[in-house]
Length: 108
Ligand SMILES: [Zn+2]
Image (cartoon, rainbow, N blue to C red; front, side):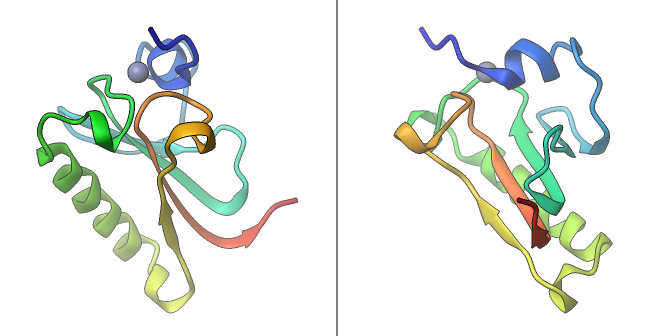
């Protein structure tokens, strides 16, 4: 049982309010609550899954990257910079699959 899950415990059950960037029936994209970059968006599946290796279906990945594509276009990130990051194992702080879409400068 995973106990450290910021997304199920606080975001997806609306215990904290977030600035939503995009939302579908299966995926939520929102501004990181403690951003590490000048633009820092988190994209999560609404259904709990720990990481890529635990996924039964990859259809939600298509949804996540479709939203990422829309956000890249919305913010015109091709003309500046961006990267999409997901972590696993010890690199993963919150044990719920999530992707960081980051751009701009890293905040120290
Ligand atoms: Zn979860």
